[in-house]
Amino acid sequence: MKLKILKSKLEKGLEKAARLVTKKASLPILSFSLFEAEKNFLKITSTNLEGAITVWVLAKVEKEGKVCLDPKFLYQVLGSLKEETLEFFSQNSLLLIETQNFHAKVKGANPEEFPIVPKLEASEKILIDPKSLTENLSDIVSIPSPTLGKPEISGIFFSFEKEKLRIAATDSFRLAEKKMKLLSLPSKDYSLILPQFAAKEIIHLFGKEEKPIEFYISPNQVFVQSIMEEIEHPKILFVSRLIEGEYPDYQEIIPKKFKTKVIVNRDTFEKHIKAASYFSSRINEIKLKISPSKKIVEIFSQNPDYGEQKSEFPAQIEGEEIEVSFNFKFLLDGLKVIGEKEIEFLLSSEEGPAKMKPKEKEDIFYLLMPIKGI
Image (tube, rainbow, N blue to C red; front, side, top):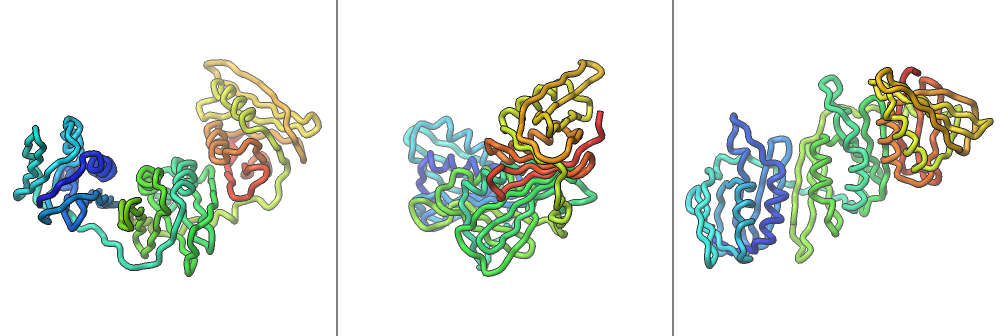
C-alpha cells in the first residue's frame, strides 16, 4: 500500500478500532487490526471473535494493499509527531511511516492470518437517532449480570415494533424498559438479544454521531453503521453476534394493580436513600414505611457495626400503609433510569414487585423486587 493521510483523522479512527483488540496467547493475530488501503480510504478492522469494528478514514491512496498492525502502538507513535500529513508505505508485514522530519518502520503481521469478519449483506435498514439510543442504553446497560444458567437475560433485549424501539434489561431482581421512536418504519417486527459488551460498544462508538445510525438484522448477527459527515459513505460499522434463546415475557410479571402509590421528588428520594445507605446491612437493605394518613415516607436502616438511622420526608400518597425493604443500590439505579423530576413509585405488596415510572410519562418503567425486612 501507499497513501497519504491526515494524522488527526487517523487518530480518531484508531481510537475506535482499537477497542476490540485483545491479546490471546492462542490467537496472537487478535492483538492486531487489519489495515486496508482501498480507493479513497484507509479501512481499519478489529475483532475479538464475538464482534468486529470497521472504521473508514479518508486518505489519498496511490497504491492499494493491506497489512496487520497493532493500533494501540501506532496511536502512541502518532502522538509524538507534530506533522499533520503522514505518508504510509507497506512492505510485506512492515509499515513505513514518513514525514518531513520523521521516518519509522513498524512491525506488523501477515494480513492473511486475520480472521474473516462478517460482511454486511443487503437487508432491511432501520434508522435510529444515535443520541436517543445511546442515552437510553447507558441507563440500563449495567443491569444484566453474566449467567451460565440463563444466558438470555445476560444481554439487552431489543424489540422493533412499527414506529418504536423497546429495549429492556434484567438480572432477575430488577428490570428496566425504555421506549423510543424509530426514524424509519420496519416492514415487520424484529426482536433480538444483544450481548452486554456489544451494547457498551454501541454507546462508545455512536454516542457522538450526528447523522442517524443504521441497524441491519440477520438471524445470528446485528450490524450497526454510521455515515460520514462529508460524503455518503460508511464511517463506522460494528457487527456483533446475538444471544440465542427467548427473552422472558416480562409483561406477565408486571402487577395489574398496586396497593400503594407514592409521588415523590426524585432528588429528595435519592438524598434520603443515600443517607440510609451508610447504615445499611451487608445485603444493602433499607426499609421504607409508607404512611398515607401522615403523607410521610420513613426510611430506616441499621448495621451491627455502624449503628442505625431514620429519616422521613413528605410525599403524595394514595392507598394502604405498607412497610417494605429494598436493596438501596437497586433503588438508586431505578431513579437513574427514570431520570425525571417527579417519580411515581407503585407498591404491590411487602413481597411483590414495585414499579417506578415518571409521573407524566409511560415510555419508561423500572421494576424491582423487595427483600425480607430488617
